Image (cartoon, rainbow, N blue to C red; front, side, top):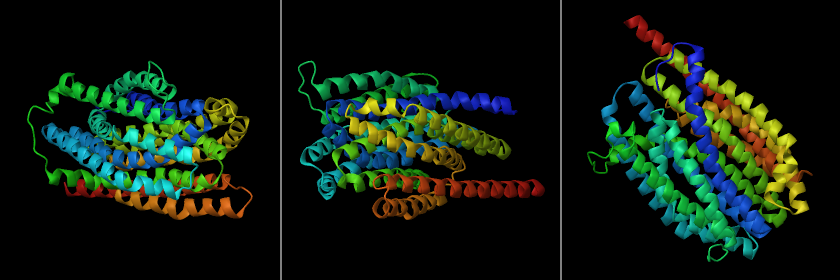
Length: 457
């Protein structure tokens, strides 16, 4: 990161920061994409099982990633304020915290996985695939969260290309491992959808090892000497990170868990409907990486400018990101509308599944617009370290508005399963509008504070 003096420089720097984040996010999402698509080629049962497993895993993943993501604005503001000496302690404590969080998830999963799956009344084969997909995936949770901690450090420095390189190295490895474990190659039994969990877990270990090596041995990260002095775990640092990260994580959990809740509520439908729903949701999730990357880049840029007390520049980056998000929404909408059939055929060859997937994709076009506005605003608010109100807005928008609306449309109108997607659209739209008002309030508050300080000086 560096200071910019005009709009053209800001656009250039923002693109330099965002593009590697975009490649990284898309590539990481492609791992889930490969899991789903390649499992679907095995059978509809494997596709449905991985769909259910993913719907349970992704909210937990995003919640913990949100906690870890707090390191990005912390590092960005430290760099902006030229306080580099505190960075090694922050990163080491973040790694300790990620290990503790991983242990908590593993212990909780041991006790609640079976009861949750039994509540869903799944077909026996789908139940089996979902359970052991998650069990396999669980073996890679700890290295995954360590990687995300290291990645947040890299991104906070503005060195977003480093994490991009790591993921680009691991992506073909993940695809190859999926091929081996799902279909049974090189003398290994065909595990079907469960094999996708095994492959992804191994990939998580690979990215973690590479990332730790890079910050220990590769410039410019070596200049921060992250591991030269070993710090003992300190709960005070964990609490400091949790103060920012927990609201971020819970807000992201509320947003992603509504999709999982919808998938769970749709478990009463037949396997083809579940498979089609997940196929459309999986591809829409891939496209969501575009506005999400804008939001993550805004966290870095806004955090850096706030740390340097250049509040006007922080606002400029914010509006730049929101504009980009809207343009992205138009682009992704066109992609979904024009290529709905091609997208559906990526996931399955069953004509009924393809037809249902195309219908779900039409609804995805509308919620992409709300996502493309809301995600950049969330990123900007994280840069301001304003996270608590965002958490409340997420809970209200997604769970108190979106999900009830979806339930009513699904159960009391002719929309049937598609009614849940209407609820998603309503919830995301309400969230985006509320976040915009919050952003405008925070910007006015910062401006008033700045004017007051200028008058006193």
